[in-house]
Amino acid sequence: NENALALPVGTTLDRFIMRQQEDFPYAKGELSQLLRDIALAAKIINREINRAGLIDITGAFGKENIQGEHQQKLDVIANIRFKRALINGGEACGILTEEEEDIIQTGNENGKYVVAIDPLDGSSNIDVNVSIGTIFSIYRRVSPIGTPATTEDFMQGGRRQVAAGYILYGSSTIMAYTTGQGVNAFTYENSLGEFFLSHANIKMPASGKIYSCNDAYFEDFSEPVQNFVRNLRKNDGVARYIGSLVGDFHRNLLKGGIYLYPPTAKSPHGKLRLLYECYPLAFVIEQAGGIAFEGSVKTLDVVPQKPHQRSTIFLGSPEMVENLVKNFFVPE
Ligand code: AHM
Ligand code: MG
Image (cartoon, rainbow, N blue to C red; front, top):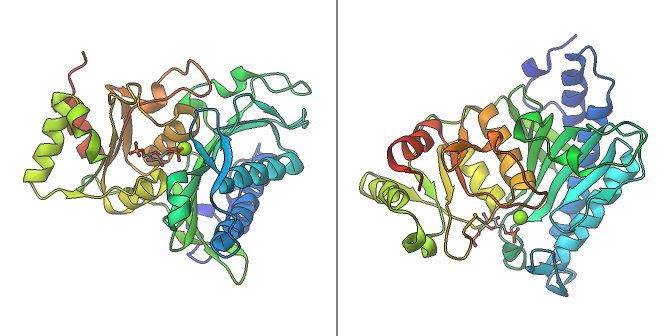
């Protein structure tokens, strides 16, 4: 019996998932199947993104999503693809997606899991051929099997996630996820149609030079946050900000750095969503040795109030984030 964590680079995602599941004697394979369903949706979305420029399927769809933002056609497509994969897969009883106000009932009332997703994040980057991503978070349901999914299934808090991850559609397409035993990333090989283990057991640098925030909001940042950024500017900090969360996250995960989305005048509670952006990335980063905070509370410990709630975030290398939180952040 191979240990999943000892599997070599080049192992396929399917094999990795299968082996990893054998490490849980009580696992019945449903979570594995769910992760495979997500990988399948990722492949389909990857295909759509790749041909987006060719067949002119990008551009405004003439609809706004529930947050009132401009919704582009690829967001809609990604949402549909994901829902279809999860509905057909049968393991998830409910879905919460950034694109829709209400919880979606998949009809699989015997499914043990619920999935919260941002099917295609970074929508402003779609039309300009810049990296975009998918973020997902999985819980074991708390409602009884055989009944519809409930809001409570999604509102268990970040520490109750059983798996979380993201797909980055960048110069390569990469899927990274955790089930609480470290973080592994898999790179998609187009011609073979498979994800292969490329970054085994990722451990992020304890510190780094990169800081990622929207400079346009600098004047809105609190004094402590401004001081933190100024300090980095003076001490060989490097500014990097795509404005595509998954891309900014993945780069900082590998290179070391900090991502900041503090309160701003425009977004006093932050811009990112707690359930399908902050929680999953916080789970991944903690599993890689990093850390995430909303103000002075760890993101994973933030108690959720509503499904689409926003959350401010400081996310990244532990020394940098702790430095900000301890020495610079003064709660108002
Ligand atoms: P979206 O859900 O409309 O795609 O917005 C989310 C994006 C993130 O990918 C990114 O980190 C953030 O918004 C950037 O926000 P801003 O443009 O305010 O800096
Ligand atoms: Mg988003």
